[in-house]
Amino acid sequence: MPRALITGTTGQDGRYLAQLLVAKGYDVFGMVSGQANPKIQMVQEETPELEFIEGDLQDLSSLISVVELVQPDEVYNLGAISFVALSFRQPELTADITGLGVLRMLEAIRVIGGAQDNSIRFYQASSSEMFGKVRATPQTEKTPFHPRSPYGVAKVFGHYTTVNYREAYGLHASSGMLFNHESPRRGLEFVTRKITNGIARIKLGLQDKLVLGNLEASRDWGFAGDYVEAMWRMLQQDEPDDYVIATGETHTIREFLSLAFEAAGFDDWKPYVGSDPRFERPAEVDVLIGDATKARERLGWEPKVDFPGLVRMMVEADIVAEEARDNHWWSVSRARARSSPTTSACCGRSTSTSGPAPTWRSGCTRVRRSRSRRPGRAASASTRRPRCVARSDPTRPSCGRRATKPSPETRCRACSRGGRSSSPSSTVCISSSARCGTSSPSSGTARRRPPSSSTTATRATR
Ligand code: GDR
Image (tube, rainbow, N blue to C red; front, side, top):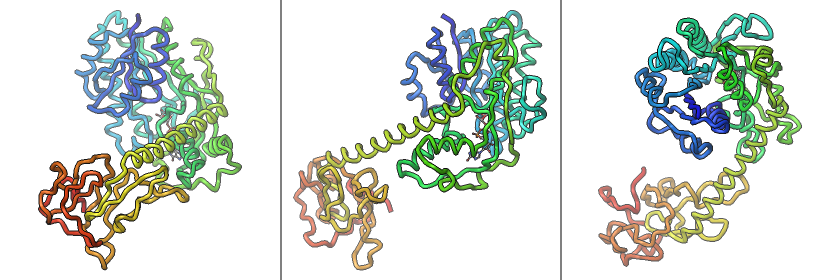
């Protein structure tokens, strides 16, 4: 069984590539850095066969260990700071990971696989951002580079380092100059996904507007699922080489907006789109369009998903995902409310929640209702803790504390001791089903808890 190592496994491309390689019968290892990558669990559920291994593109010794342990036949270096806008804010980090990271991985391969007859094949994720202020249109493998961002500069370094290791050590090292490639798995910071996710939220009433930067930029957008196939094909060639991977079409962000809003059933996108110079870049790449003739002829590769198909796919996926998230949110809050027949209190007076459309009952008038998330929806006894509002009401003394969260506990939460209050002056029992016997104030005047008190019922959060 061939073995593949992927860096950047939890990114969009890494996820598609891992699935492709597993389907092709590979043992796939995904390198992850850091202690608690929040995406690992999701990727693991998506591709259970994938094995994670710790390593960091900033740390050569970790890469040597990873390559030694995995003994890969193929290494796909997709790890990078890949958000161009971020590279302007963190240029050194970008140079280190996106640029020097390539050198480190190639060194690890050279050290473990040997400087002669090294059998480990290497794929470098190069980028159309290397062409930047383009010198020719469309861009081919021969078009000179003119990067316009620290990201682009770092990718040029990575690209030429790959070429150099190929020429100097005879490594089977190939570079894919991939033009923009998108999917429903694209990060929300990139313009296509920001648009499709924003549209879904606008459609569901969760957001009013989409705020973007430069709408005149033009990109050659393809589907990421198609592009990972090209990566794999490069490493199956007898000889390593560099390839442009692109659709050969370019579209402005305005065109993307128009198609995407249309796919969601809107007639006109302009009322929903605002602009903010914060999303503009110090130096912009205006127009990119790639010529993938070489890939088509030598790799037999061509894109399957066209531009309208890609836009539709992303919009539809985002609408489904946002709907599911929204429904989940509401069902969780309802379930919580149902399973908590009692116990939300402030200043010693309890409120209760029940029924399918929970609201704070007015047992305690000093408990503020949770704010409804959307106009027209009932206030929900859900995730937000209601706060005692008496502070803002000069006629009432305030405890100033947050009320306790609704909870199914039957134990007295005021005293936390088998349902009895530790001191009559400390607070009152707030549980309806297990009152501790401490006399609750019968009037609407709440007792003020001494500042030193630290019972679980009213942890102060001023
Ligand atoms: P890009 O992708 O920089 O081309 O790099 P991105 O989607 O970030 O930007 C595309 C174009 O859209 C303009 N734009 C905005 N971009 C973002 N992110 N957010 C906005 O609000 C916005 N408004 C306008 C940008 O200025 C730009 O012109 C991507 C990355 O995946 C790289 O890692 C990869 O190498 C290249 O594609 C190929």
